[in-house]
Image (tube, rainbow, N blue to C red):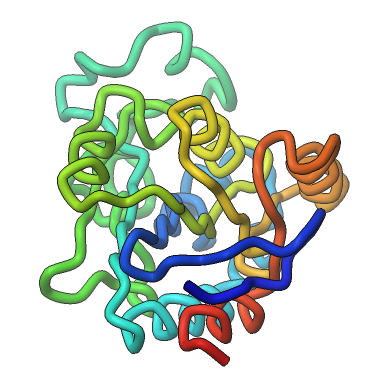
Length: 222
């Protein structure tokens, strides 16, 4: 066990029962011409955290701790994408439509890939999820149970949507959750700030907040 300096208070971290979950660091969300940009968002805000997310991943790999990546994407026939989801956003470029990086948010298309700088290595788990949360309609719960993991560190995008949804799902399932504050981002800075406040409010109602340096130091017993 190692003590992690976090908000709203310090927490003991057990690397043997911990996993990093990197949420949706995909080309469609992060790169120009992808789904995120098609909605009018400034993707440079998300691109800026790539080096920090990379440093966080490297810290977990060096400590021999489980790393899990998620991708939000759908089957080619869109059978797992309800109309209520597909019909939102930019009418000119929906999920499944052809975009600059292939069909938008469709599994196997270039845009659904994780950005090259953060590409998974051999042995790391990659979960394709059809919803915002990492647990919905995926095998994540089973994977974590099989590895006896009880603590989760989250990073990725966007803070207020897929990251927060996944943290809340995990919190409801009894996991202790930490959000790496400098390894997550939103297209809307105010939304990120509000999400961080919500997570740590009322004694950590959803989880804890810590920086990448604090998390990596705790993993390595520093």
